[in-house]
Image (cartoon, rainbow, N blue to C red; front, side):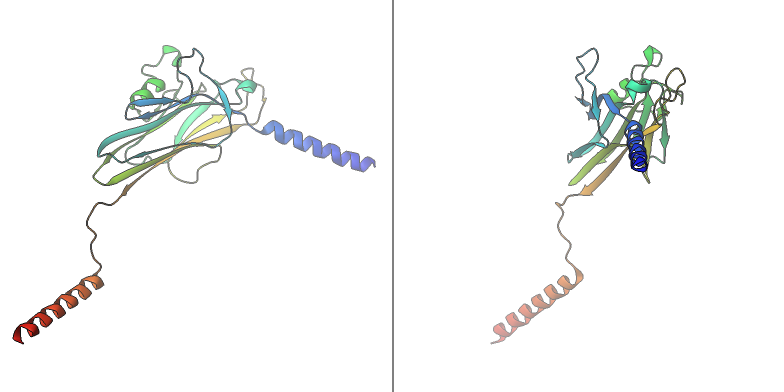
Length: 237
């Protein structure tokens, strides 16, 4: 009986450790920028925007099919274990190679007025500068990704953005890292990460005259030749 209680106690300890190690993700604010039109994920009229816990992954998507130049971007200000170790102990980094037309930004969304323009301004304008405004120093971290692209006739662009706690295996992405250390230097939670990445797919959607397959052309030519011979025979009769 004693051995059973020891085993049960060990199971409870392991379960408690797993629960404690699960990071809590909170979105302070977010918005999309579609050709200069901002759509908010939190109420910008509030002095302190609405915060909400979320479970990763979060996704955003958009589709364009009008001819011309376009911009679409997503700004996010997520916090990792904010209640345990604050929101200004995190770092951001960019990894991978940018695709043509892709842009990014890392920075403190407010920056205490020490950086102008800050990431908030740049994401709102759609003018990301492919840089970390925090300089790799621990701070409040916000992330932004954007795409500039040009559509021709009969083309459709499909964009997808993902904020995940799973490391991407390829492509360009932004990394937000929380070491789990409090301002007093105490390890109060496990290190945790978020990854922000996006894709752009441009496809032709039709409208052009189909080109016949070679076999179709041969059959069509044979049929026309047959009609010509038939017409000649009728004329000779």
